[in-house]
Length: 145
Image 1 (tube, helix red, strand yellow):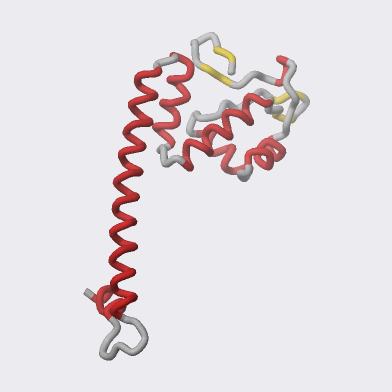
Image 2 (image 1 turned 180 degrees about the horizontal axis):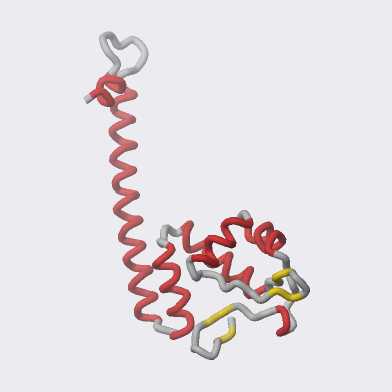
């Protein structure tokens, strides 16, 4: 990342000596579709490079940023939180980044606990609906309620 005149962190451009990728190549390397790249550009998560010879060229910094966005999404961060994390990278505000990560861990812990309760309830219902049992299956009845 390089800092723009406004102080924001942004990907290095093709003219700064990085290998150039087309939008299709960037999308493929990042494991996303071209429309996802354009969506991230509209949301301000990725800059749109200038056209050189009619084609936009994306350097490796774009790919690193794209991979960061995807990893942060997999960790459960919202796009707004990801934008904040990217901005924090420019300001080096570690305490806020740590706070965001801590909040995300707490939310994931709550979700895990919820999923474990659901799993335990389903196991119990499956056991009650086991072979040799009679009457209506409690699994079906539980979804009817």
